[in-house]
Length: 199
Length: 199
Image (cartoon, rainbow over all chains, first blue to last red; front, side, top):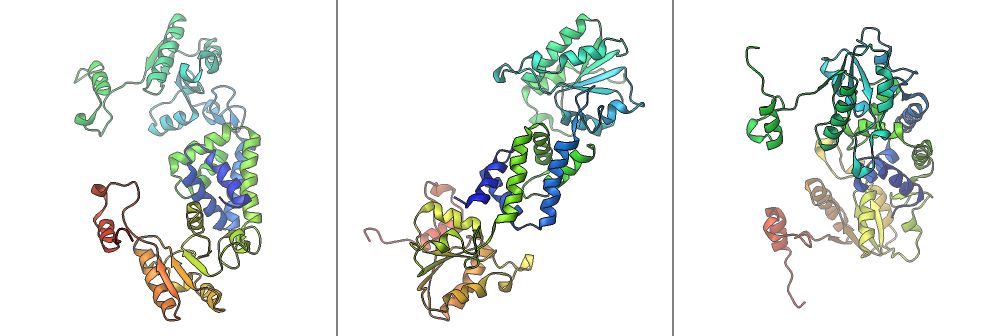
């Protein structure tokens, strides 16, 4: 519907995740009327990310050097590895300030519907990291959904076979939530994982 | 939370309209892992829009030349001008294929809360277009909200004073909608604007 360049931009924006045709149009018009310096900063940020950012050789997290900030940090314990699906999950866990070990980013979860099997994930890289015996515990922090559960079960079996301590993040009622509105699976998990008080 | 370049990109994306922190992060990660050629096409599209696209000297619509595609089209009637708030509205009306006249884009609506008054809109440009007497009808196609109504009322008074025929798009029940779910203002308008059947 639009003339050449505007339509091209709407098409390109529409390929971004979560950007529908209406948002793409809205963003294109914003770019059209915005200050040129602001837009230059946006394109520069895109170019810089593609140029400078890579994935950590060790854990698969985003990095600007061979190893990411966390893998380079000598204050982080090398004995515990928290395994996550995506680099975004690293940031979510870092925000809690609860975990002082290192990470391993799988790059997804086992999902037969999307043809993602164990070989498509960074599992062999994880096994390599365990070879020297430094790591004593693996915390599985997959998403609490079908794909995450399948991945966790697969990894627990694999890691159990080499005799490493494997733990999984607790499932249960979200803090600040309302018991009445919890779905039955979550509530079931909360019962299963109940803890002795005064412990 | 992220290292330099990734955080810079998330910040820049977060400035786009309708892109919250979560979407900005999601888009940034998409850009990070996407094929470099795809991303080059996106940045190129942004650069091209800023370089090639301008606003039509006559109607204010988006254009790649001095006058937009519609103003240049000799098959479009020069006797009727449809006045809209934004260039996006031109596209919405063009999709109906109902209107064969020309447009005038105001660049917004009167909105005292945002300090937008008549002088901030392209109203004097509209008056200039009416000077030679070619235009016989002005169709007001502002948004059916408070700001749109205020703008339409203002323009109707201004244009009525120079003796031009001014019409306004009908308000009423949306086609395919359910009477039961129509809000009271819309339903009231539908009554007001009721038409004689078999007319």
